[in-house]
Length: 298
Image (cartoon, rainbow, N blue to C red; front, side, top):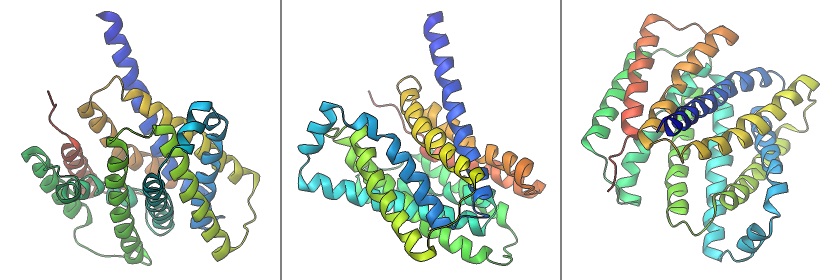
C-alpha cells in the first residue's frame, strides 16, 4: 500500500511539474515575441516539436498504422491539426503579443465551459449540476476580474483575437474527443499527424506574411526549450501521469496554472495584479476546475 501511495504522490508531483512547464511557456513566449512575429514563432515552436516525434514514428507498428488509416480518419486528423495548432496556437501567440499573459490565460479558461456546452450537441454529453455551477462561478470570476471594463491600446483587439482562439480551442477539444474516444488510432499517430499538418501550415503562413525573421541565439534557445521540453516532453509526461491520477485530480492540478501564470508574469514580466484581479482569478480558477469535473463511471 505504501508503495502505491508513493507512486501516486510521485505522479501528482509529475503532473504539477508539467503544469509549471506549461505556465512558463507564457513567459518565454512573451520574451521571444519581442523579436519574432507571433505566427512565425508559433509555427517554429510546433514544427520543431513535430520533428521531435520523427525518431519514434518510424517504429514498424506506427508505420503500419499510418498506412492503414482510412480517408475519413485522415480528414479528421487534418482538421484537428488545422483547428488545434494553426488556429488555436496561432491566436494564442497573437493574443500574447497584444495582452498581458494573465489575461490570455484567463481567456483560455473559458475553454472547458464552451466544450461542456458544445458536448451537449456534438458528443451527447450533458454537463452535471456541479459543472453548471462551475460555469456560473467562472463567469462571475471573469466579470470580477475585468470590472469595470476598460481597454487600453490593442487590448480590445487582443480580446477579440482570444475570443476566436477560445472558440477554436473548444472546437479542437470536441474534435480531439471524437478522434480519441473510438481508440482506433494511437495517441502517438494522432499527435504526429495533426501537429505536423497544423504546424507546417502555421509556419508557412507566418513566413509568407512576415518573411524570414532574424533569430538570435537566445531566441533559438527559447524555441528549442518550448519545443522539446514544454511541448514534446511535457505532453508525453502529462499523458503518462493520467494513468495514475484521477480525472478530478488532473482537473484540479491543471486549474493551478492560472495562479502559476499570474505569479510568473508578476515576477518575470512585471505584470502587476491588483487585489481585485487576484480575487477574480481565484474565483475563475475554482469555476474552471468544477467545469472539468465529471462523475466516475462504474
